[in-house]
Length: 423
Image 1 (cartoon, rainbow, N blue to C red):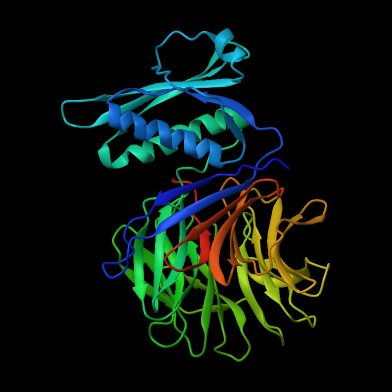
Image 2 (cartoon, one colour):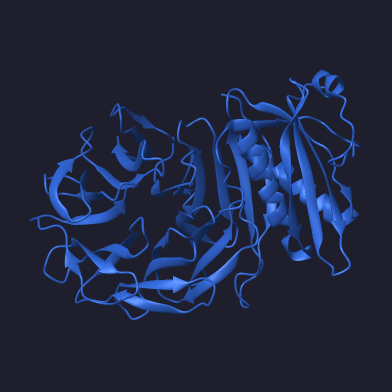
């Protein structure tokens, strides 16, 4: 497997006023076997702004592990520049992107670009995005998404966001960042643990468990307003929230009637919980599939395994059979793959099951993987793992070929959740 030995240090925003500025380090340790050679010419126009957009596009594509960047040093092209396809083909580029940034009198800018297939000597299309000084990287992400989709046939995820929890100096911070780790902002700070963040289907809210009242309570938090409300605060434990595909309900785990069982509650906090499982064991970690069915972990058969049931409960089917410990099921958005954590020879490793063939593949060589989360295009899986006694994040492609490692120097990073496509 080809490897890229490089490290990109990306600056994060201040975690809090009392914490020093942290950096997210992304290390690419594996790439696709057949990367697409692509040239990204320097964008023309406003110098500083053009450099930011161009650098963002290049970084996104290279970080994906699917593209090999062709050298364009000293070459600046806008979306209307004549293209010598034979020349770029001779440089080894299968595709070329060119664009510009123009500033309007009101201070806004427009990023225009076009992508070319140099092998066929044709344009694959282009677009224009209105942006500003504060949104230049966002424009770069959108351009990278467009290029990614044109060249792979899949939607790009560079414009999406991730959530994760940083533990530092006795504080827990729920962070929201771009998919590349930049632009981090703190949604919640607490001296008590924050766990299990889960994105609403439209990306506007997070559900999570907070121990701030000295017991686990499930909250729903609006990212636009910062307002939040309690959706599960029954006697005992309230944990593991999972959004229904329509965003109206949450599956949660409660111990109010004894053993931990799965219930469903309204996302707006109205009404009472409806019980979905009724076993003598522990049922936990629910997660909705695209069709509305629910995967979950249970020890009802004697060891922790993965099961599936309908949205309203009822008939339960066992899904995992290899090994004595399989937990944390996460179905992909396309419904084709189930990611989970499997214990093998004392190691807790990210594993993927092809749901059509039921074939299983271990995707990592680490020892303490947890909390898997699919990218919305189903290609990558974000996990928490442990390196040298410290929590870091890793991203692994669903076939195991592309691997990245992300860590915050300021503390442990846990509980990752990859957000949806923007609606």
